[in-house]
Image 1: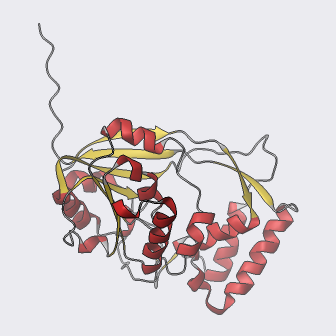
Image 2 (image 1 turned 135 degrees about the vertical axis):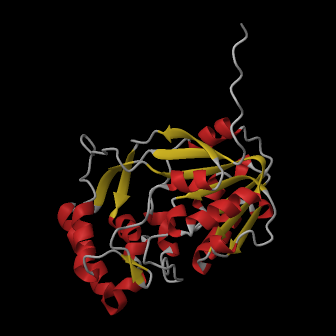
Image 3 (image 1 turned 45 degrees about the vertical axis):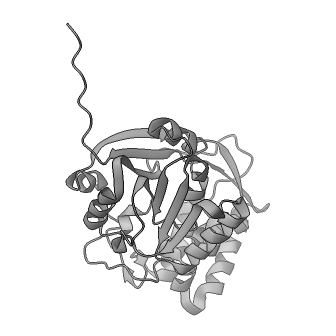
Length: 288
């Protein structure tokens, strides 16, 4: 958790309805990579901490006997429940409205714990230690995020790129230059360095895997607008009575860039760090 900032229940208020349409998916092949690396066979229990609307947990449901999603936002949990019904996995899915700091919350033990771009919002030392205690012997913690350092040009694709920098400038014009986060602000952004946190908690690792992206995507104005409203720093409630004015100006800006209302984008690659609950097995010495 960032110094000087405290979590509050407005952090993602109003964003849940925009997630499925607005957020880019994880790279294709993520489930296959995790199945191979973790030797998943449709058994075991998964806990997805900071699950949002169930995006990650539901994409992995076929690899486990049971999935449990935990998130503090009531609307996120409601979206996850609805999506589980649509996918026909309600019998193996449980959704819990709670902060990660409230764990273990009587949920039992798990073979895998996932954090999909959520760990930075938490009291990380506390949550890491608690999660390790909730993992079975041989269990793993998996930290998943988009690869932030890759260039994703839209050269040779049919539509203009989403004007991310211009959109960020518009958000700052309405909300100010300092990043908003719930009722507070994050002048320095969210914290990094999760490797040191997990090592302090007693995890061994990590093993890094990159699931390649780069696949061409087509985005509409509605999808780009949904993506903006799905982010904590541009959540709908932050705009107050100026929300409609912001959206109208955003839509005008987008249509100025692409009169067709369509944009090209490339799928981000997905970065996976696997950490083990138990110390790594020593590598046997070669027989002389």
